[in-house]
Image 1 (cartoon, helix red, strand yellow):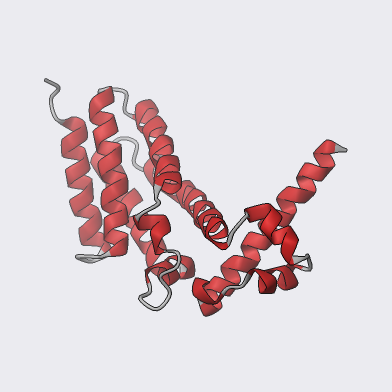
Image 2 (image 1 turned 90 degrees about the horizontal axis):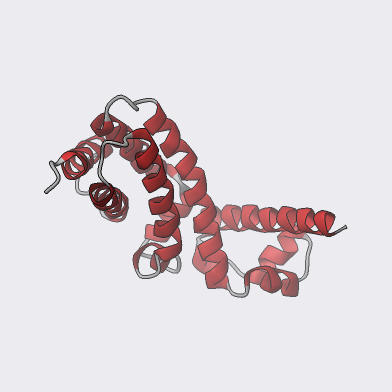
Length: 194
């Protein structure tokens, strides 16, 4: 019975996140109301608050889920180029930048008129950055064992933060940004140890 309850709760959470994603894509996160979300899913407003606690926590959960989905695409990009770290990083960053450019949630986060989600990426990024950093660190350790631990930590942190920076404020095309980040990360990862 406990397993059934957990399955139902997981399904409810996914339905709430799906509805929140659709509402944010259509009208922006600022206009999202927990009561409207509850109505869209067919539950009480209290159920929504019991699941997420607050609208800010809902936003963080929504962005966390999108980040985890993004990590799947990043891994596929890395897998396609395991023989060359620089090329792999470039492909993964390029994937990420293209995805962010067309993702309505990211566009809503970065919109000047809908900045309620922006702190998830800028001032409260620990959950998102922590997940990405841990996943990428484990991947690099397994795929390129010749990269020493400290270089790996520095390279992964640089890749995550530079990519996020280019998502927030693109300085070039996704292709140019991916090339620049890949070169930076490869230089850090492959630099001779001291």
